[in-house]
Image (cartoon, rainbow, N blue to C red; front, side, top):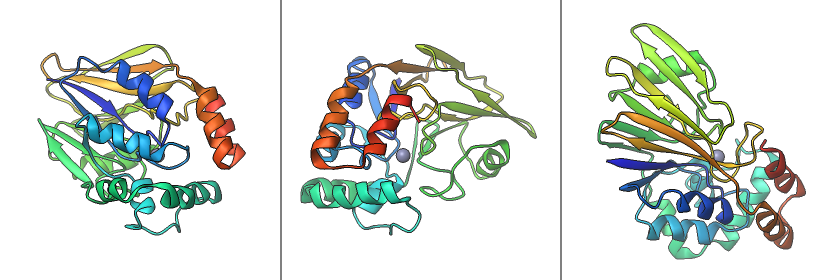
Length: 243
Ligand code: ZN
């Protein structure tokens, strides 16, 4: 099976369209949460995920936008975008986001947004946090989102290693049988590794290979839409620098 792995779309319709155009030939698309928040197209992005039949899980922004979680852990700009999102999501889309599970296990893969220590809250940004997640992991591979940084962690016996993925058009991760992996394919709609291009992955479970792919999208349109609905300027600017 070939799986498209998308995460952290964050209501960025143009980045989602550019990414899905590269995922036409996969068997299934898996979405690791934060479909909404930050940008101006929450309904269009939620509907696209639904209509593509993606297997999706919830992220913290999806929970907050549907009132399954409070806003205490959100910064000022995230909070403002969530309040706008809540007002503008249709009831049907809210209902879809509300019923998303926080974790899925498919084809020997665990899919979640944050970490097994807190499915939609904790971040994995270092080897200790990865170790804590590995200690609870029952599959060989775990795909995560949440940090918006493409990188992966390998567990070999008691050793945990972090591998950065450099911003380039395509990067490859070869899955070895005797190792375990926590993989973040980056963010479709709000990358934070100083590369503004959308980031996503393709996992080939037969070839045991994950490809991380970057594509450009029409950022000016995304930013104009955000401007038109009055979302904070800083959220537009960060799309340009990929931060
Ligand atoms: Zn996110």
